[in-house]
Image: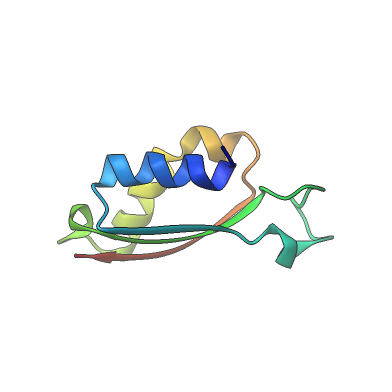
Length: 86
């Protein structure tokens, strides 16, 4: 299982997501800070979830960051988030 697949599964379950897409965009950052050969350092996530209803953007981002705290502490350098309530 790729890191993107593991992230998607974790977020889908925790957020009861209606839609989730996790893309490894590490190749777009080759040679930049935090990049490693083989990728799995930079991700773009798009999520639609009822768990985001009534929460502002900062609160939504904090939810995702909290859920991915272990991953962010162990190899993920950047996480681009596109979040919305369903």
